[in-house]
Image 1: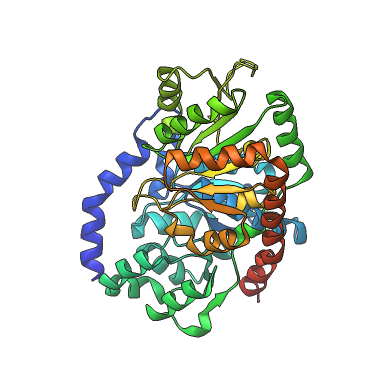
Image 2: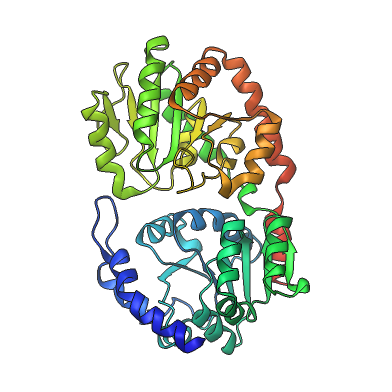
Length: 418
């Protein structure tokens, strides 16, 4: 099975590398650092063994941030290395400043991972969510480095996929020291795939431990003051095929609330320019966040063409629509906890299977509503924006939900370092 896997990996690697290195608008270039994907990893600033956290891209880096800050708060001298696969993830790590160092994750070839380990010599490997590669786990385990999966998710769809390649899953699962799952259902699926019960824990989602610091709130308030006294809603993490639906809803909303402002935030940076063009082609007065142009009363759409500022953009809005939820089975929604942490009511489309448990609980509380079309989205936005006191009350329910479920980070770290 190992031989078959390595043959398939060798055949697929040119495609994987092309997707990583292909130039796209809004996507940072990897430049001379491409060698790191093959294990040619520069030495760290210190010889002290680091805690190694792997976070594949932006979302995982954001999820890892409270873990990183907690480790450094308790042990300021402990080096932390964060690896990412993508350049956008690397850009997000840069925002952590001197808390961590960054390197690119080597591709899942034994020779690349060995080179990396000889250079870095980590004391632990912490993997955010479920980024599991057989050769990497095997090589890391052979170096005597304990491996823990944090904030682990395993959807029913992924579970069925792993069942179809059970022998490959068996290659990697035996090397895991701990699997810290978000929910009981995730833990049950990992156990059903053959991971020993005494290695599997339910620690909750670290995403509940969202850092809504005074600085984050201040930045949101400052941006809101730039928008002026007007109704503002944000469409967060939208995907190709959704922006037209969002903009159609916004046009309808402006018939009732002509001064309404849409903050439109595409999920992927390579779409920033094309979404800006779409807004202009549909005759919306649009301002990019990265431009020097000021928001005026005539501005209808504010394009969030930056990475890692979602909390600021949500904080400047009254209501959040979460993208990735109008595309059937293609995406399955995104995390509604960020608006909840900022006491904002949220709306989502009918496809939210990746965050089913959280969404259902927020819907039950009344803090989230499900809409099935552009017309429904307009109707719910109109109602909540015309009745801001009701929107604020729903936001309080959302915030309480976050407070009642936070605390995953200390539970997780207790297991990791026990």
